Amino acid sequence: MTATPILASAAPPDGAPVIQVQKLSVLAKKRKQEKKILDGVQLDFAPRSLTAVIGASGCGKTTFVRTLNRMVELTPGLRVSGQVLYLGQNIYDRSINPVLVRRRIGMVFQRPTVFPMSVFENAAFGLRLLHEPDDEIDSAVQEALTRSGLWDEVKDDLDRSAFGLSGGQQQRLCIARALAVRPRVLLMDEPTSALDPMATQRVEATMRRLKEEIVLILVTHNVGQAARVSDRVAFLHQGHLIETGPTAEILERPRETLTQQFVSGHFA
Amino acid sequence: MSPTPADSDTGREPLPAPAPVAADESPGGTPTKTWIGRIVPFIPALIPAAIIAAIAWTLLNASGFYNFGWGFWLPASATNQYGVLVEIVGSFLTAVPALFLSMVLGLGIAIASTVYLPRFITRFLDPFVDLLAGIPSVVYGIWAFVVIAPIFGTIINPWAVAHLSFIPGFAPSTIPPSPTTAGTGLPLAIMVLTLMALPITTLLIRDALRSIPRDLWESGLALGATRWEVMRRVGLRHGSRGILSAAFLGFGRAIGETVAVAMVIGLDGRFPVNVYDVTDTMAAYMFESLDAAFSHPILLKNLAELALVLLAITFVVNLVGRRLVSHIYAEEVPGI
Image 1 (cartoon, rainbow over the protein chains, first blue to last red):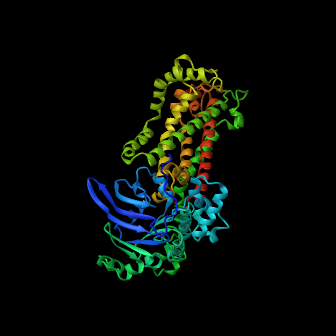
Image 2: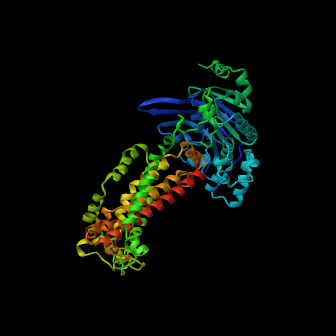
Image 3: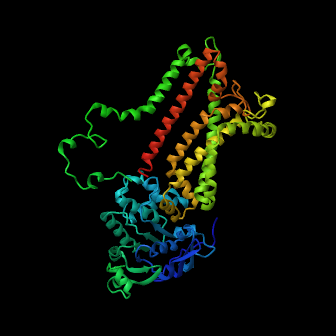
């Protein structure tokens, strides 16, 4: 089951985008009725940046991030067209195994999804899949938990069940779990929507730290969150990318009326 | 979910509670004043326990326990000519392998139907598991005796004797069935019990695996795991509670099954030596001996004592199972 060619892993040339989305469309087919969930989305993601994908419920933003690691294929009835280039390579190329894509492009979900095992084993999950040696796993787990900002809270009791953690801690554990395999890109699908304000602050602090290292793509319906953490904003409306640009520009001086309406909260 | 704050207090508009009633913390919501009112709710709740206690107590009194104590299971002796250790051993020799096989098959079916097969196929195939559970046990018994026993007798057992006899226990049968019932014995009984336990194990395992939250499942895949890796490392663990319940309920089914086993086990009161031997189980023995017991009071007492043993075994297995299951529940997946 080894897929060749293996996805590129070399560092991209300075400033070159890590992910380039080209003419990406997603069609949903249900009882012979076709509906475009995404329509010709064109978007680049630069290294060491945090892009917030904003939009109203049902605008296609979750589907959009799920196309970036081929999770979209798990939903029956969806058809993807266009290209998603990861370091110049189309992840939808026939020769590419989606399992490999997902090892390079991590994902964090709306609700914390810790596995029924210890804190340590949760963080080590991806490394165990790769059959890394134990000492390597130990150091990688510590590194990942540190990067996600959880290490100081759990270092004394890594063997306890992950269910004993608070919701916010669980979400940061999920971030650590995704970071442990050292992905270059981390997708976050409304990662704070199930958290209280304090826990949200912590996760946002983690995001601000992580964007200095990797590409973060954050789906959020919360304009305030986009303002607090993101460098760039992409606004989706009914499957179309309406506008994208630096956060301050989009949130304060949007060019499009739709964007203006959404960021000011006057959205029909 | 995990321990919730006292939302029952804060979730509703605070009502001006009348002070004297608030002091009465009766569970039903309406204040109970009399002791009868406090006792009544216990009565329906106690019924199951009372039934079990009554059955056990009356069986004990009807049994030969006071005549020959724990010696009842020993082989024929001065006080007791009906030793039943063979039947106890036979029950485990059939139920344990049958449980193992039905768990393996049940896991296979459940994993295939929850993870690998497309929805339109499972929607078509799943009801057959339920139908399997609905087949009366006597149908299994007759089918096994009439159709399958000859296959065991003429093909499977001779093949095993020819090719596997170097393995201890696979040597030619020392207690063969009579020529007219060739093929009956342990393997056939195990097969029948496997089929009968299969729907229980499959349904419970399938439900356990279906209850894996979708985002938990996707989190595993998002880490670059294959479907099988997610199932093995996360799914089975998440479903361990239901899988364990399946094992205990399946065992209860297998060890208690009577009619079908009586038809195919051979009903021979000797210890089996080789795998194809005929032997007997507790349930089958009680069933077959009933006629004779009416003219032999000691045998009747013996049967009652054996029934008590079977009751105790199922009771203990259930108790242990519940403990294990609740242990897993508390340790691994609180509130899911």
